[in-house]
Amino acid sequence: MADELAGVTEQIFEPSPARIQAGPPTHYPWLFSFTGEDVLEVTSWNSAAGVRLRISGRMHASPDLVIPFSATHTPASDRSAVTSIVTLPPGELLNAIVWAESGAPQAGQTFVRVAVRRGMGAAFERLGVLIQGPVTASAARAFPGSPVQSPLEGEPYLRVISGTTPGAGGDISETVPTGARWEVISLFFVFATSAVVGDRRINVAPLSGGENYAGTSNFSTVPASTTNSFSFAQNLPSTSDPINSVYQGAMMDRFLLLAGATLRVNVSQRKAGDAFSGISYVVREWIDV
Amino acid sequence: MLKCNVCGGTYEPVLADGSQYFHACAPLSVVELRDALEKKTVSLRPAQQAQLDAATADDQKTPVAADQLSRVDRVLASLVVERPNKRDENIAGAGAPGQPAPVKRETLGTTKV
Image (cartoon, rainbow over all chains, first blue to last red; front, side, top):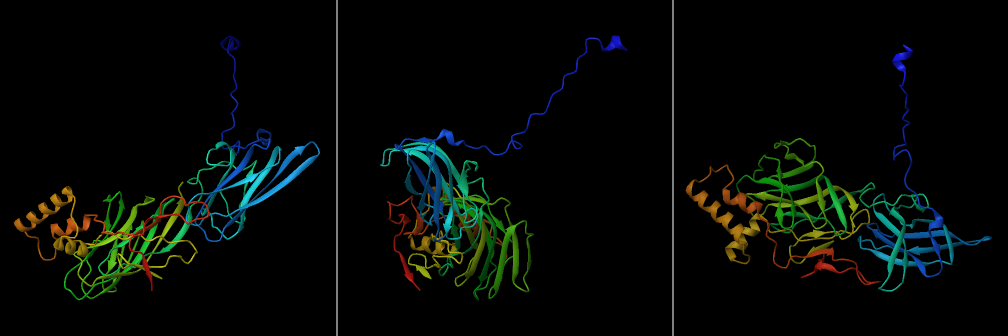
């Protein structure tokens, strides 16, 4: 037995911690010394009304002197980028924090980046990123501590939208705003038909770049002189109850639309006097910048 | 509530959650497109015109039953033809500091209703 094991050695492979066990990456304050030439550049993208951000922190100015700093930043509410500058005293940045001190942005509505930059005019160099991620009134981003995130990594804002009621003869058409990305969850509308005889069929289609690239329908036709409610949603079975004028159909799973793309509802064999109303839909909305 | 002076659509520029709503005119509906083609106020792209011509010829050659969609109607429903003077209130990038962001296409504007 002993001869059989002669020359055999045992090697133990100890598990190395997976990245997720090690926690999110952090920055270390001593990496960011300020001599007076560099400033903090705060840039925001936001869709909520009445938001004001607070940026605060502490500077290690000398061995026995810690100087706090604080500034405000007011984002636009149309998802356009707004940038402001925070000047810092010379020293090492110990920590910084940013959160929404006014307004009530929901998760996914307000995205902020705090960077180090040199130069305050049009010509500048962005030299580092301290903080980047979504904030709310109670969820702050911090340096050190918070990972630098893309706006698409966070939880999107669940947005209920009352759409445009089309003019006479018009279709439903809802466009993804600049700086946003949508996942359409559900769509509801009322379609009233005129007395002109004929069966109509409702089509739901995404448009991008001026082209239809998919389509779905309830497949039941809608007769004249009726007022009908339509619901389309992910995973919703396609069925109808024409006696009670209720129709429903499925939309694509992960129905993603980029900025400028359109959610369109049109009608085959539409007649004069047919009209849409009561348009509302739910989307998961990311800030996409 | 605002009414678009191009398409006649009505909408609230600020939604119940306080977020801004940006209206953009819908492409022409089947009814509007058929009317515009008859009045020659819009023209189709060559590929779209070829689709429509082929569908028209097919409908004449083998007409569909009364309870079926005509080929022409199917083609018209699939075409995306923007209306002349289409408005698009979505922003075209950030504005100058302290100024509102410029919109993509204001054209004929809106009326309060």
